Structures are given as C-alpha cells and as structure tokens.
Image 1 (tube, one colour):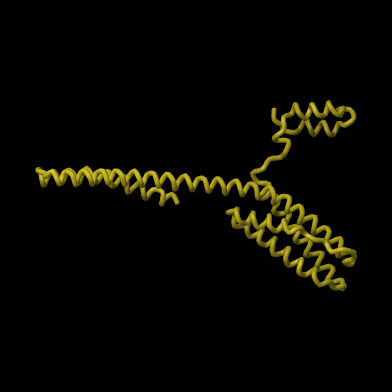
Image 2: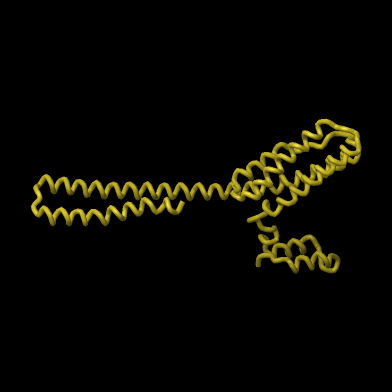
Length: 226
C-alpha cells in the first residue's frame, strides 16, 4: 500500500521538474515565440498546474477515506471482541449443560444455545485480521454446529453418551482458548476506577478492615487510578 501511495506524488514531482527543463529547451532552440505559441505554452502550464492540484486533492481524499475505513474497522473489531467474550461464556455454559444432560442419560429438555452467539463469533471473524484466531473462531462455529447435529438423534449406548461428553469438553476447551483474544485491548475494571471512590463506597456501606481483612488486602494491592 505504501508503494502505491508514493506513485502519484512521484509523478507530480517528475512533472514539476520536467516542465522547466522543457521550457528551457524550447527557449534554447527557438528563441522567438509567436503570440500563439506563448498562449499555448501558458495554457499548457496552467493545465499542468490544474492537473497537479486535482491529483493532489484526489490523493488526499483517498488517504482520508482509507484512514476513516481503518478507524471504523478498528472500532468494530473492538466492539466485536467485547461481545465475543460474552458469547464464549455462553458457549462454556452451554457445554456444561450438555455434559450434565448427557450424564443424566439425556433426560429432560435438550440444552440450547442462543443464535446470537454464532452471529457474534462470525462478526469477530469478519473484523479480525489474525489468521490463527480466525481459524480457531471458524472451528468453534463448525464444532458447535456439529455437536448440535449429533444431539438431534439421541442414542442410549454408553459409547454415544461418552462421545457427546467428549464433544462438549473439547468445545469448552476451544472456547476457553479464545478468551485472551476477546479481552485483548480491554482493561480490568479496577484499572479504570479511582481509589478514593472505592474507599468511599466501603465507608458508606460500613465495611471495615477488622471484619473484612482479606477484602481490604485485595483493595490495597489493586492498582487503582489515583
């Protein structure tokens, strides 16, 4: 992309350098210009300046549009990661319910996963440029779909039960492996909180260090804002 950005400025600089050289050569080999030739030369110079100005404006517009696109993409990626963290939690909760359901010989209602979970994962794939993460996210989607399909037809054999439990365990592990990505760029809540506000709330609710020593030791060690 950087190479493309340098092409137009290079052409402009080349034309600006070439124009005086061409004018010098014309004067050198043809010292006397008719009025019509001067008019033509002046028109050509003005046209060249106009072309340079137009190309410069267009180049700035392209650069501005590209920067706006990148900013928008970055915002969407950040937003999709925020939603992805909740979606992964839903997947983990779903797999735990599937394991309990399978261990109970599939008695009761079949656990379900909200369709919004898959949509959140697909959105993260759309805006992420990390190939390795996208492979994991795509695998997560396909694994969910495969597990759902396998649970459509219930078998009572012990082998079937154990296979479905393993499916749920592996799906859970895959979801957990993506939590770091979903939280990348985000900060823990206590990093955004001012210490004096925490201390004020503790006092307001009559929570003292004698009764809650462990809590106060945590507060003391936390890196709140000053």
